Length: 330
Ligand SMILES: Nc1ncnc2c1ncn2[C@@H]1O[C@H](COP(=O)(O)OP(=O)(O)OP(=O)(O)O)[C@@H](O)[C@H]1O
Ligand SMILES: [Mg+2]
Image (cartoon, rainbow, N blue to C red):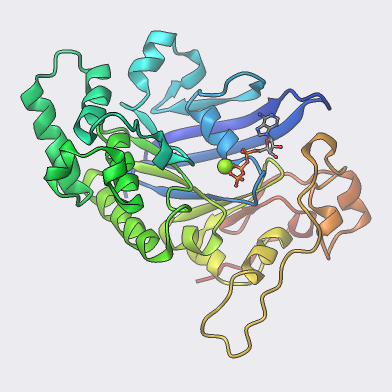
């Protein structure tokens, strides 16, 4: 087997927001690598730090948000070591993002073609109109939108079509990493399914790596080969998605997420939530941030923060697993 190259390498990334009540540690010592053409999921409750991490990777944090530690490399290049000019050339060409509010990201007074052209011209100043038209047509074919919509304005498109246009723009300069932040959350279930299938198809054809962010655990585990579970700014478990679909030896928070998925095949469907609420990031609980909600918590959990460590084929940050091998599933 040839060695896979990492596209994204995050090491010990921490991000904080200044707030009147003190710094909010939204991302806390996260390390994660994504390899060529791999789809990795990032799952966690609202407020767990998923979008903050995405913005940090794209170097788009503004105002009160700032990186407090760690490093991010894309294709071996330190994202925070790039000059402003280099960053401009880097964004969209090597890393691109489909934003959480993607559909409103389209400019209402520009046609689809103009918006694609804008992105291409921002990187290839001398591209001719004919070249741009050809590329825009190819992109619409790829996301299965009739070419006649090159002349359409966003309001003339359905929600699903707008989302496809946003994806087309994200991949128009052939980046090697695309971050998709809740790309289908605003859509109904049927459209959501067709877009997911399409993302998989396009990804196989064009070949890029994806960091796919969602709070929907079952959706992510279907799409991604590996999934990182985030809780209160930390990755608490990183495992293959096949392994994650099997209940077994997981971080107690992951177990909670698994129990919260309705199973259509079960006779008596009991959906259990996770007791308690996500913590206030200004005053994180001591030790393991999950311990006040955890049925297995011991005294140690209240004082000592568990580190993410390899346990069998997964990485889990939990004292329950320290020093022992987790049996391998499937
Ligand atoms: N502008 C801000 N000022 C202060 N704190 C912020 C700001 N934006 C976000 N935060 C804090 O950062 C944390 C992480 O927010 P983030 O948007 O990254 O979460 P998320 O996992 O993407 O949530 P969601 O699933 O709702 O999109 C939140 O808990 C919030 O308290
Ligand atoms: Mg978010």
